[in-house]
Amino acid sequence: MLRKSVTSSTRANVNQVDAHRERLGLAPDVPGVLIMIRTLDLLRYADGVEKGVLTKEDFRDALLHKSGWLKVENQTVEVVAQ
Image (cartoon, rainbow, N blue to C red):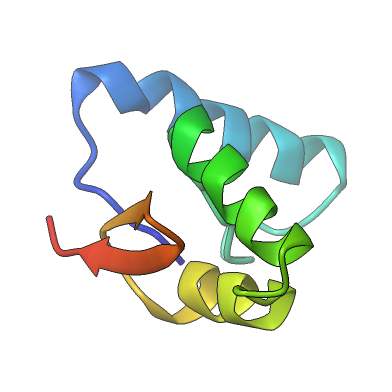
């Protein structure tokens, strides 16, 4: 999961995760995933997958097990700790 400290700019996003959990009838202690990723990095990753250089599985692993900024440049992926 790419996590970032909660600031006033991300508070609305956290509240949205809570609202989705409530709408689905889930308990407040059910974990939610908040993913914040730059569109450019997402497009670069998708391009890498299409070219066979990057995998969907690695993307999933980065989202679920790492914390920081997912930076994609020149078909390489780096998770920059925040």
